[in-house]
Length: 294
Image 1 (tube, helix red, strand yellow):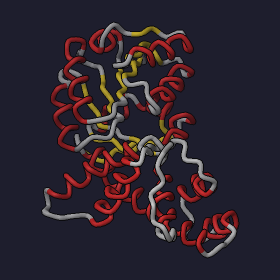
Image 2 (spheres, rainbow, N blue to C red; image 1 turned 45 degrees about the vertical axis):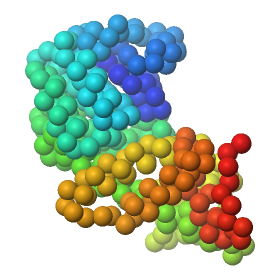
Image 3 (cartoon, one colour; image 1 turned 180 degrees about the horizontal axis):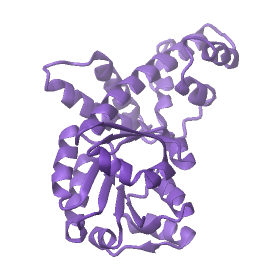
Image 4 (cartoon, rainbow, N blue to C red; image 1 turned 180 degrees about the vertical axis):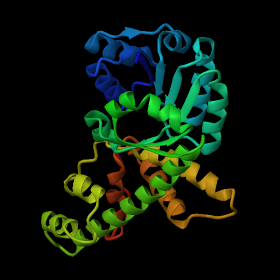
């Protein structure tokens, strides 16, 4: 199935590489031409002249974008090239309402909102978890291509259900980040051997993916993405908006937004979310000064 990829950032580029290895990648396009040029040189794949040109040449279009407005703008730019029988799969994280609007803009093509979880590692290894909203029959039709970029593809319901599921996922991710970083800062203050703490806690009821994959690096002061603080902040702002529809505030989300904003203001927006460990160490720091990025 001829597949095009739009959005060649930390997630889109490795997904494009996996599609190329599988013989599926037909075209790429990126709003900043430099990224497209680099990937085109690396893979020998053609850069589309425009989103519409990419759509016209492909049977499936995979999107990996940063924000709601970006998605809607790209969907409008795709429209002249959209045709019956093709499928647009959006792996971005946006609001449920934006996904529903994007589905309407995709006509006469089919549309799936299919946000992913698993970080840059999952994108590189093709082991992402994909949460999909849309028609089950459409998912089944393109399943061989989706299996190239995702280790698990789960149909969650109609358009918007994928993004709603991702919102739930992001709240859970925030809670796990809060718990792990706070616990390891506590262990640091208690002068415990952090490598043993990670091993012992990871082998019991407190074990989780984040502790196993980020515990050692955060305690060594390494905060390479991963999943950037600024992106999780954006996602949690979406969760906050969605909860407001029920006249409910989510305390965990509110707290994490505050902590992430402090990190962003200090210059750590592009670090992995495990950089929250910086904030948690401050709880045990007598002077309370926030570290500034040099």
